Each structure stands twice: as structure tokens, then as C-alpha cells.
Image (cartoon, rainbow, N blue to C red; front, side, top):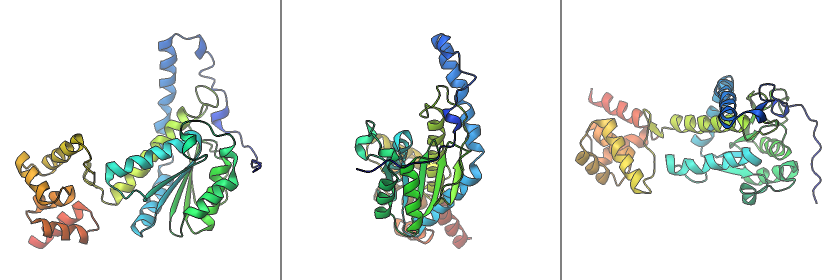
Length: 308
């Protein structure tokens, strides 16, 4: 049986009592909700303070994916569940290969629904899992509200030793950068409404960081055109309708012209877009996209330059 790792605790703001909420149990329902909402408004500003570090993490992820490597998320508890959610949603939203973003959660799939005792304290377990999963050139993003979760820190150290670039999203700005972490993203959301309940502001901050991180990565990789999702996979009627709407908004073409363009492009929204925007056939649109690395805007610019 593994012995939980011994760590030196650095007091995290999330564990402190919040002086603004000490009377929350005396308030009526609307007052409770208002106080929670007031505290939640502090989160976007806290995330805004770490955007330079987050930008570095995005660029490292883009570099890894462009080179044929992968992005790994590592977390425990709320952090791990949010990471699993973000990785899962990227496949249908941006039609990325399912192995581009890999989520590692302390305790495995069982821990998604219930607590698995001591899983987050198992530094060696995190190290072993990432040592078996990462390759040189991968990028690993760890998430921990406390900044000291042994499973996450063990995983990041092992990943770094195996040639992966690493970053840590932490809710504890007082903790020093752990060994094996290239980029530290420490979001200071302060004391929670309920002391230690890191599924609240700290969890909201991590969700915001993850969403911004993965969305920016997709934009840099050309998975959008303007602010439109153009690499989506139409797996149901709603998404098929969205594809037609995107084509209409991006090109100004009629419903019939958009439907015809999608049919000619075998349902590939990017090809249909370049076909309509450049007035070229599907084969030419496909070639332009291939030469641009899949970026619609770059493909359209190349086409315009050729015809100028």
C-alpha cells in the first residue's frame, strides 16, 4: 500500500475564513445568493492578472500540437473533473482528434462520481501515470486549488523529466513554483464564501482558465474563422443547422448555396467556406487549406493574393 506523500503546507487563501461572509448563515435565501454572486465577481479580475502566464502556456500547447504531440491535463477532485470536461468537449466542438487532449484524474473514472480516498495524495501514482503517457515534446497542464496536490505535482515532475513542457494552474499564489513546472499560473481568488470549499471561486477560476486556454489554442491552430467554429463535427440536427448558419453569416450566401457548398465539400465546413469565399472548386479549396495549415483566413488571403 502506498504511503501518502508528506508535503509542507503553505497556507492557501482558499482555506482562510472570508471576513465578508461570516454572517452568511443569518441571511435570507436571496441574501445568501447575493453574497455568493458578489464574491464570484472577483474571479474574472483574478484570472485577468495571470493572462501573460496563460499566454505562455497556450503557445507551448500550440507548439506541441503543431509538432504532432499531445496536451495532457492532470488534476484531482474538482480540478480533475473540470479538466476531463474540457478535454471531452473539444472533440465535438472543434473536431480535434480524441488523443490531442488527454485528461488524467486522480482515482481514475470512478473518482469522477465519488471521492476516492488518498488518490490525490499519491504523488508516485501521478508520476507513474504520466511517465507512461507522455512523450518528449508533449505539453502537460496541471490543476490544483491548493497548489500542492501530491498527485498533480508528482505527475508534473515526471512529465518534465520525460521531456514534456509543463504548467501548473494553482489557486495558491503563496506557494513557490514546484519542481518540474515551467510555467506557474497562480490565480488569487481569495478566501472562499465557505472556507475551504474550492469548488466555488477557485473552481470557477480554473474553469475560466481551462476554457480560455483551450479556446485560444484552437484559434491559434486555425480551428475558427473570425469568431465562428469552423472545425466542428455535425453529429446531430442542431449542429448541422449551425453549420449552415455559419456559412450564411461568413459568406452572405443563400441557404441553398450554402447547402450545395457543403454537399460539394463532403460536409467539410472549412472547404465549403473557402469554396464560397474564393469562388473556387472543392479541390482547389482543399489544396489552399492544406497549404495554409488548415487556417481558413490564411487560405482566403492566399487566394486573394493569387488573383490580385
